[in-house]
Image (cartoon, rainbow, N blue to C red; front, side, top):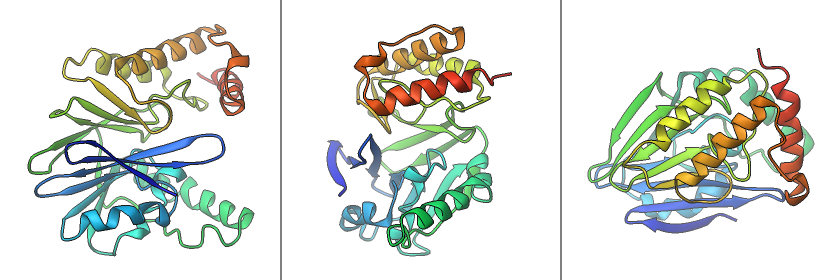
Length: 252
């Protein structure tokens, strides 16, 4: 069941819960354009948004192509929207994305048959800006968690949709990711004077302290430090941290 929560004027947050974590997206309702930030994991997750979109032009943003962020797109009527993502996001639709869906359909028959994979039809490399009429959304590449990870900044509200680039208590760090570039990109946002609110896809909503905490974790991980009291973490994040430690050994 999707939670649809007003957050700022003309900005709503969407959220679904799994046993181990939650996933959060967003809806921005501009005068001229509506934007959905991530369509979550299933078309049913997007049903509560439909009454708010009647008659509006719609753009969908994929923060990255992980399954729990992109599988809800088929809820929207065909030919009524565009999908925007990074070039690497589009590439993943011919690589891991279909394999993940097939595996889920085999493991959980009857659960994922309504999912249709809808790749981006508008792609960019570094930056992409949208004018919603009375709001704007600035998209910026921020690789690390995945090569196609992006963030979305709403300057009118000092608000950053961060996807999986930051997370509390800790992010997922894959093998061979550009950890130095990840940290450097986060530091630029940490020093952005207009930024006041950070909305990650997983974990707490807050301020720049979320960015600082993620930077600290990544630095400690890269240096081989033990940055956490593992016993205080939920089981899912204990396992994620141990996997991160294994992956860091595969960095070039």
